[in-house]
Image (spheres, rainbow, N blue to C red):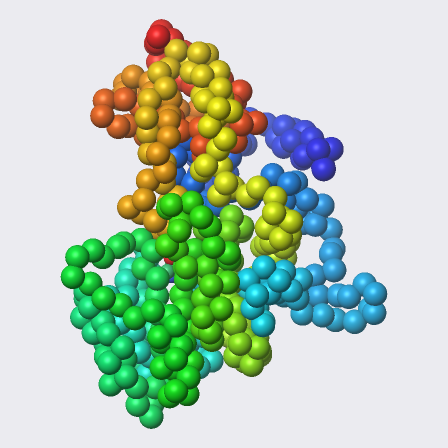
Length: 407
Ligand SMILES: *Cc1c(COP(=O)(O)O)cnc(C)c1O
C-alpha cells in the first residue's frame, strides 16, 4: 500500500505547481489530514471519529480494486452487502438482527418510513431536540410524513402521558437520548423498560434513538449513565439506532438493530436502496467492529490514557516546545456527555493571536484552543505517532511568526 501511495504522490508531483495553484485557488485545497489537539475526541467539524490506524491501513487495497461486497466467494452467489457488519453488530450488542445505512438520520428516516408514514409517532416534549446543523427531531418526523404527537412537558413526562396519547393510529413510540444537553432540577422522564411494557401491552413498537453508537456499557464516569445498545435491547426495546462515527469510533454510518421482523421490513423497503452504505463505509465499519469484538483499544480509549505514560509523553513534547503542562479538561464531543469533562493535562503555549492561525495553516495543520490567556494543545486527541509532526508544525509556526521558543 505504501508503494501505491508513493506512485500517486509521484504522479501528482509531475503536475506543474502552477496547475495545482490554479486548481486550489479555484476549487480550494483538497481534504487534508489535521492534527486535532482540541481535546474534543468527536469533533464534527474535523470529521468526528478518527478510524483506528489498523482499519484505515486496510482500506486502500479495497478501494482501487473489485471486492466481494455482494458476492459470496464460496458459492458464487449474490449476498447482502450488509451481512458481515450485521453479524458483527449482532454478536457485540446481542441484537437479533441489524442493518447499516448512511448515518443515524437515515436509520430514523427508514424506520419512520416503514412503520409510521401518515400515522402517529409519540414523543416526549423533553426529547424534541436539535442535534446540530439542521437535524431536529420534530422536523425530521414531519419531513418523513409522520404525525408527531407530543406528550408531557419540556421538563416532565410520565407514563400516563404516553398511555393517554396512544390511539388506533399510533404507529410508534420514539425515545430520543438527547445526548447533547441535560436537564436538571424538577424533571421526570419514562425509562425505556417502562415504555417497552406499555408498547407491548398496546401493540406499539418502541424505537430508541441512542445517538452515539455505544454498543456496550462503559464504566468511565463520563459514560456510566449512557445507555448502550446492549442494555437497551436487554430491556426489550424493539429497535435501537445510533451513529457509527461517534462513540463507536467508526466511519459515517447509521446502525439499526432490533427485532428481526422489523429490521427485515426496513431492509426490503424501497428507501433502503437510497440509504444503503457504500463499500468504503462498510469495510471501515467491519474493521472497527472486529476490533471491538476482539477487545482491541479503540479511539475512544485515548481519552483515558495510562497516566504515567501520558505524563511522559506530555513532558517530552513540552520540553521541545518550551511549553508548560497545565490541568485541562477534554470532552467526548459529538454531542456525547457535553457536561462531563474528562480531567487531565494539556500543553500550554502563550496565547499570541497569530499562533492559532499559523498552526491551522501549517503542514500538517494543527488545531488547538485558547483558554484563560493560554493556547492549549491536548495530546489525548493526537496519536502518539504524530507527536513528532506536531512538534515540527509548532516550531515551524513559531519560526513563521518570528517568535522565540518560549520557556
Ligand atoms: C448524532 C445524533 C443523531 C444524528 O446522527 P447522524 O449519524 O449524524 O445522522 C441523531 N440522534 C441523536 C440522539 C444523535 O446524538
